Length: 77
Picture 1: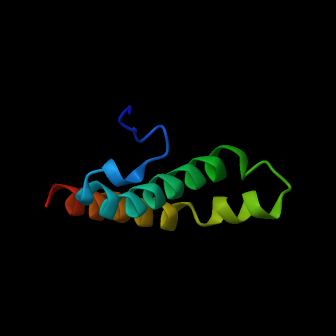
Picture 2 (picture 1 turned 180 degrees about the vertical axis):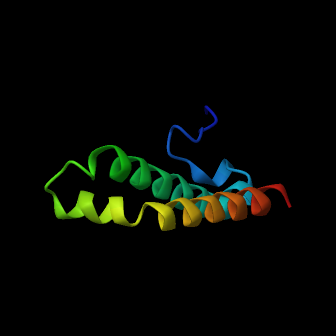
């Protein structure tokens, strides 16, 4: 029987440290993605969500950096 991979959907083979850090890393990347979307499209848009992302840009950057740093530290410990 072939060994299942992460791409095949088997999360049991993932390293335990990476599995613990993954939510923080995903949240950090999401914050940076929201900040980038808000910065590039929020100022000129009439969408309330994009305007909110534009107004929250500094906070999203700080939270994203904190989550990525915490995820990196948790993964490397």
